[in-house]
Amino acid sequence: RILKPGIVKISRFIFTSLLMVCVAVSCESQAMVKIVIYLIGDGMGIGAVSSLILSDEAPTGFELAPVIGLSETSSADNHVSDSPAGGTALAAGVRTINGHTGVDPDGKPLTSILYKAQAMGKKTGIVVNTTLTESTPAAFYGGVTSRKMTYELAKQLTESQVDLAIGAGLDHFVGRPD
Image (cartoon, rainbow, N blue to C red; front, side, top):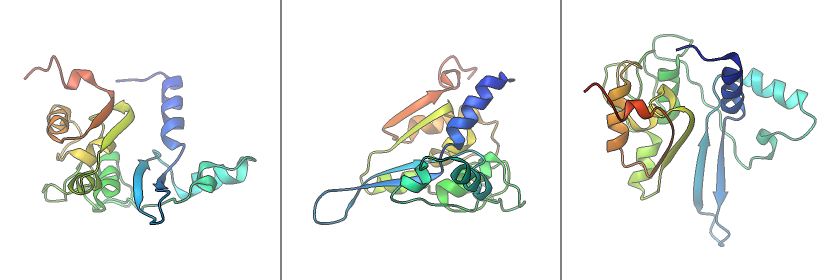
């Protein structure tokens, strides 16, 4: 599928806007973490962040955020990671091979931070400006050995007990060939 250059630019801008973890703490005397919002910037390396900070006169989200995090996401079989392997590293903290989403190099499912949050009784959600079955968001709720397994990822999302899912890709859920 070929996207118009304007759409690609807007999508990249939104996804590359930030890679940070914003932590809102409660106002009670105990500093308990109340809400975690995990924003992922596509292709957002140290060079891109440094360029943003150096080129923008106003404070950036990186400078204003109470907490930011960086993650090294190279895959298990290559220094250059693709979206499935990179998303898996971000979601589960485990390196996998390029092409795998939410599974280890042997294809065994991994436990993502989303499932760990659910186990703690937290509400979870996925909000994207792409399809919900795209590799990076899918690494948080699903596990497949090929990024092309979008129908399987759609099925896994419906079984994931995610409280909120907003994104494109309705055709992966309804009017399916199966």
